[in-house]
Figure 1 (tube, helix red, strand yellow):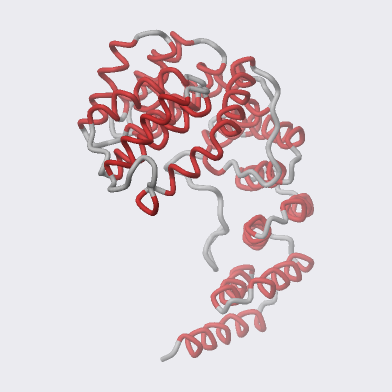
Figure 2: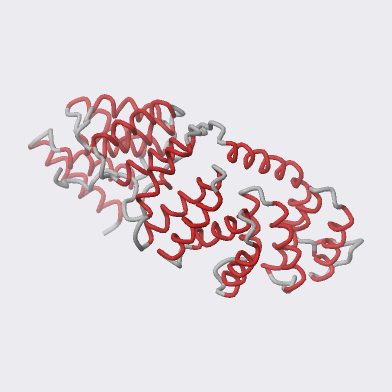
Length: 362
């Protein structure tokens, strides 16, 4: 049978269930999901809103909130959750915190996160969201204190939380503690590339260049990261000199005809242009253009587009990056950007809360 026939049959079944009992939340959620499958997202939202007026249950509300957040209607999502008012439900708090943060209500989101932490002290999800909001509020030390206990042990989550704590320790200027924390994160799960990249940055910030170079070589030899990725990590913490040194060595050692070689050279030109070293930038550019079949005076189509974009935006982007890094290092208060999601803060084994499937028991 066709998709249209299947949807029609399923719709009839759910509508029959509602006819027998108009309070069956699973049937409402099922119909809303069918609306979405049929491409009628507005219809799904209208159906869920109507159902909540009759029976403000968590299952229907959670699905509606997810749809509203996806359509960047975070303020409406907050109102839905306030109307449902399920303070005894951890999922309700997680959704409310997320919705407030995305609605640019960072102060209220943090207050809610602190209340949720008091109600659910064992919840890792709540703790991580609190830490993210504290970081945005410039309360770095408090955020670190929440993350450090989560980083104990082995496995993916321990490594992830350790890397998060390590990044904040670097921002706070607690460099030696950051090296210790991120080293433990890498040991907890050596497969975590982000933790390994952060370790390279922390070692560089601590002045442990021999250890940093060994970590870089290990990551490159494993094929786990490119020179460009590592240099970008160094730039993100404000280590422009370290990034440029790494790229100079890369351009001297790898084939510029390869994708990795072209990207490393392009980023190096960007840094050299931004720092005002025009002779060095011209020399790197000439090597890159020649390697890909052009000439230094007439590169034509052979010149990688990435290089052109990099040169044009170099000074602006690097100035912005340096300013952001400086503010982070000083612990200046921040704020959630409008529409910014904090889903990435949730544990790997506990994805962002979503509505349960139709008919799921609560």
